[in-house]
Amino acid sequence: MGAMAGAATEARIARIEGVLKQVDRRLSHLKSEMASIRAEMGMLRGEVSKLREEMDRRFGEVYRRQLRCVLVFIAAMWVLITMLILRPCRMP
Image 1 (cartoon, helix red, strand yellow):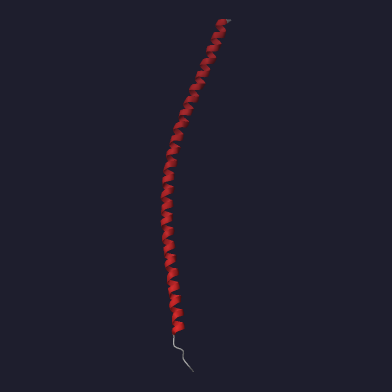
Image 2 (spheres, helix red, strand yellow):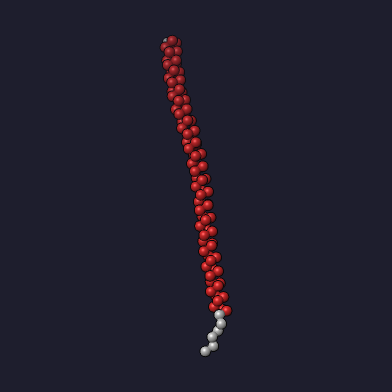
């Protein structure tokens, strides 16, 4: 019975070793997948950073354009009001 128990124990150990090898292979696969995902995330971060810079640049352009329009409008109103105030009064 000792030889049978030893063989059964060895079979169990062999089965456990096989399971551990499968787990090791799967973990290695997951590790490589995680590395590729991290690389992709790094690329995406770079692209998002570029897009953010582009948006900041474009919003800056729009802001400057709007500010220019507002200043031109204010200057035109100032000229118009000044002309209305300073025009000579005609007496009837």
